[in-house]
Image (cartoon, rainbow, N blue to C red; front, side, top):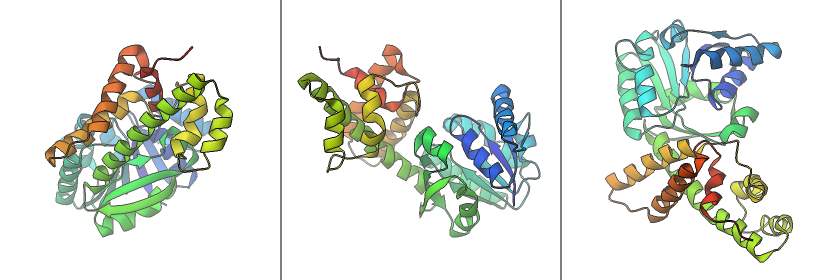
Length: 295
């Protein structure tokens, strides 16, 4: 078993770190909001699982074989990991760093270069599956890095993954995640309009779901979000704030490649509208709120 530091114990990182501890690894957690780290430790203690916490990222990673991060955005990751006082500089050599944060491919490449200079293997490994996937240990993980880094990282990630795919070199995992979010945005846009159309025609929405979820319209979003969208329940899951951050990365990558993504750009505007209506922390399925309810 490995000595592991997990940086970022939010709705995704907390459950992932818990799975590692249950698998028998020696886990130390760090969170910039210390109270969240204490809550995470207490929840696991209630299960009889022992973990430690550290007051700083640098202290958390000292002496660890493996460091994982699941933070907020590019600035958060760079602030925690890079620089003379960053966690990367405090890591022992050799070691493995797995970044589960969704960031730009450019930052992933920068992290890979910085890790290489310190004899540290690096994998950019953004995840898909949301809070439920993290809690149930059923995440899909898209990875960028060397074959050697992937060989080291895969047994660690198996503690909370249903699928692990090596996409290519460093940054490729983040590029894949951008594609993932573009696809989700389009599906949710169509699903939102489908729910509203079903409501407007007055048909039994449960029967509609039963009928169409077994055919070509079926999707993860339909199976897991149709009924809550019908009920107007959105206080769970992957927040719109984070989705807009991810879509900004996708739109930036597309612009750099000379590619237009008109549907994604439009859905991003719809999300901005829902944010202005107070939905910033609601699940991405709250996209339906940009469409008025029918009488």
